[in-house]
Length: 369
Image (cartoon, rainbow, N blue to C red; front, side):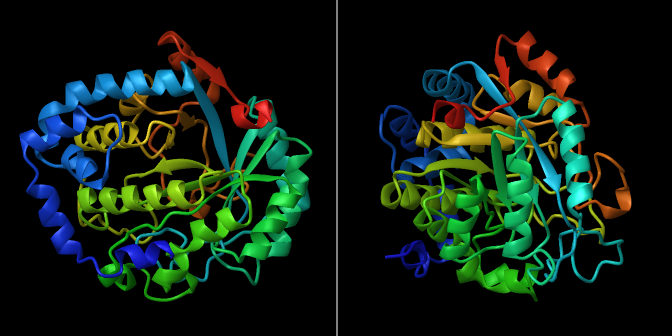
């Protein structure tokens, strides 16, 4: 059975109604349990759950320290290309957007590597738009091999691949693959992804299963906040996480649910998530799954990222650029989106250590292996 089989008969609006029907008693019951089910998660994410944020925050801190210690992993994204064949209406890389396009060659990749290494990083996330004709499996595999000579951990966020291709990436030195569904609302998915590879809801939804079947060490999953009702997105994401951890238990998992940021094309979010609501979602996931890693990118504000260091986050990015070649030659016309927190790694490290936490630039799982 695939994850799609578990949700294909669910109605989005019915799930939403079930979340909003949760009561204080449901929340208290969920908070008293050691092992939570999806109905418990709905309670924590519900409007009723918002009355228990202080208790949820303290539980999240305790559970995170118990599982991960007082440690934050710093990572950095490295964009290889902004070429894209998709027409995602919210993305700066949209094929229809009139922006400059660029794909890095070997020399340019190594130039980025040199600068990122000078920043202290030993953990890099390689990203491209989704354009296999230009940045296909051969290009990405080659980029991994180039970077693996310089970094302990090389991770990917690229177009969905076949199992055999993911096996190639793992053999080349890839440690993790991140793939976001963007929205789990199948009925409205095509509105946001009208053309291109990404328009196939099922193919994208089944990608984490192919990654796991390839034996990848870690899989990153998530949803983009701003397209559909955020509470419902989080419940579908929780169901997806639970399916993966049950059926592919040898794999490690990471979650992220970034809020939309301004980008070329000027798309405006349909649904907003406040910082208080972001906190509720994060703490609900930590209580729901004590082992899942949770990352927070530079899309979020400086103040917000400062406050979440001790409350459930396990990794953050710093000094990020979202344009290919942006560390050596910054160019806002190539960006996927505008970042929010522009602090460099040393400033982030100083803030994290001031809160009594250690900082690592190298993936702890990889070092233990």
